[in-house]
Length: 92
Image (tube, rainbow, N blue to C red; front, side, top):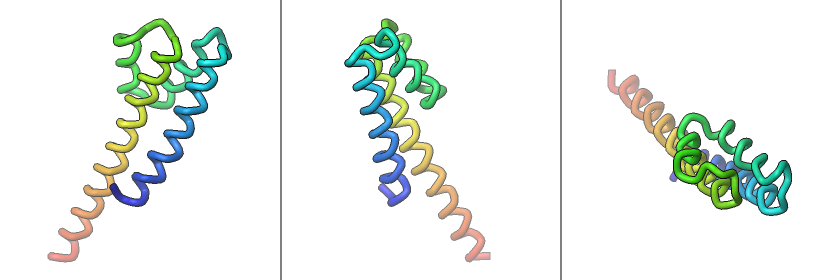
């Protein structure tokens, strides 16, 4: 993993942890953390509604894991595309 990917993984991981804690203590009828993670992890975190749709702490954790994976992949892929385009520009 690149440095930027590690930063995204850390910060989004902290966001997931906060939302799981909110769900565990019952903030927003246990559904607020799940909804926050669905909105910040669109579109893949919507799959969590199909896996565990009840807004529990486990559903919040699943939405967070899916969103975390999505954002890490997006950053990693975009960095590789940028590196590839830079190397092509240098060759020409």
